[in-house]
Length: 298
Image (tube, rainbow, N blue to C red; front, side, top):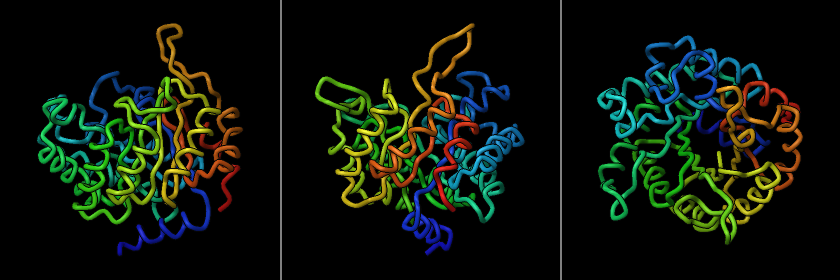
């Protein structure tokens, strides 16, 4: 077993872990144009990516997430760099590994492939699986301690990504979905219930399961969601990474209304609901994570 993956498993059994926060919005503040390929900055602007990782590391994050959310060949192809999967993912993992050192663990980030699987769309499952496997292999090559499959809405795609990461050699895999309010309770965009979503990734072999992002979910709603996740996780540790509120435009810029102190105030409730890993998603900053860190003993 990879000693770093083993130490992560042991740490998670001992105490709750603090994740990190948003990457894309932080890079945009450093000059990344909205809609541009953030993964390309792993090579073109490595100093900026290091700065984001270093800021979360200084804030107390136990886990640093690679700047590779859109690093599959499908998403990169939309930016004209589909042939650079290995290069950009290896570079992204190495940048996070450089900052994490021996104090934090690196999560190799894999987001959705950007389309729909057959028969709803034209994504061929076998081809998408190979794309996820290639991305996961590059992240592991670059030094990722675990793979994070996140912001999923299709339980079939989520399970496919988990199995692909395992086939690439990942010994520790996180899998999280994005949920939103619906008439019949919380659902993914594709209509999966919390129980259905969790069952898919548990069966696929995920080691940690949970939720991140989420449309119109308050921190109070995230506490209720956390309890549902724990009930459906079949004993797996649960990870939750809420947004810092819903985005809105103010003077031509996107702002999020939940401030660091408010975010930190939710941590005891999330822990009481059973979360073992807590971080932030869209709109969260190093200041949010620093405020949260007081609730995580080391």
